Each structure stands twice: as structure tokens, then as C-alpha cells.
Length: 209
Image (cartoon, rainbow, N blue to C red):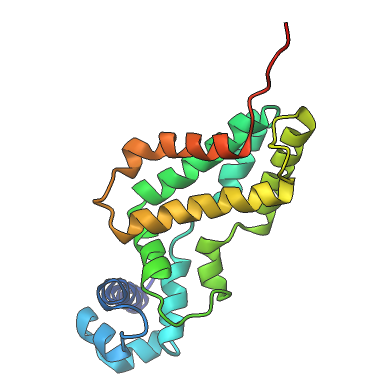
């Protein structure tokens, strides 16, 4: 990499870091390119060199982070797929751990869930955080189908409705915790939270004597 290209990459990253800081501090809609430029110590022209507009800055910021849900789900299915309850439990635990311990992801999720006042919920980058990827969605629903066959899914739920509630519960926990991360310790309470989720969706099979 040439020195000029390296300098350009550093400037781009500085702009994204500044955007993250300003989005967190004052929200996306109230942040202007002038705010970002001032926070980054660059001119607005420097921003336009790298990004078409504020929406492009926002997209690039979220593109820097990912919760690898497909990988989490695939790994759990490969190791625990024969026991759907344990597999779903691990997916939920690792998803919450990702938000709890991955600080860049945590900041991006806070921006999406609490600082995006006017952005469309169907925005593709927002969907990366608020929706399950199609592959993960199909895998999670298949696990609930296995649970249904085994008699451990609640009788009033379908696999599809269980999958929606599973994901909605986890997003709700993240939304609540990210509003004020000091209100409770997600690291300490995460497993208990997941147990509450699992008991709401699955039933323990009773064995007749």
C-alpha cells in the first residue's frame, strides 16, 4: 500500500469514528456532515472525497461491524443440532454475548436502536442488526420444527411463531439494555434471561412411570 493510499484509509476511518461519536451523542438526524467533519478534524470536502452523503457514511459505519449470526447458528447446529433446545439456548447466549462484549457492535446497535429517529426500518444496514439473516432464520425455524416433532415445543406455537418470538425477545433485551447499560449487567444476567426465553417457548417432557 502506498503512503498516499494509507493516508486516505486513515482519513476514512477517522471520519467513520467521528460519525460514530456524533451519531451516539446527538442522533443520526441531528448530525450534519459539518458536525462529522469538525469531530474528525477534516474538511467537508474530505468527507465528500470518501462518501457521497451522510447516508453513505451511515452505511459504511454499520458495514464495519457484524454480529456473525449465520456463523453462530451454523456452529451450534453442527455441534448440538440433535438437541434443539440446547442448540437454541447456545444461539441465544452467544447472540447476547456478542452485544455485551463486542464494543464496536454494541455502539452500532445503540445507534440503530436508539439514535435513528427517521430512518426506514427496512434500510438494509439496519436490517443487519434488527433482523435475522435468511439463512439463520431458516435454521432457527428448523430447530423449532425438530422441537415440535419431539413434543417439546409449546402446543400453542408453530415453529414460525416460535422463531419470531425467539428473535423478538432477544432484540427486546438488547433494546432495553442498550438504552442504559448501567441498569443491569447483561454479562451476569444473560444466562438467566435466556432461560426465561427458553421456558416461554419450550416445555419439559414428562416421563410416565
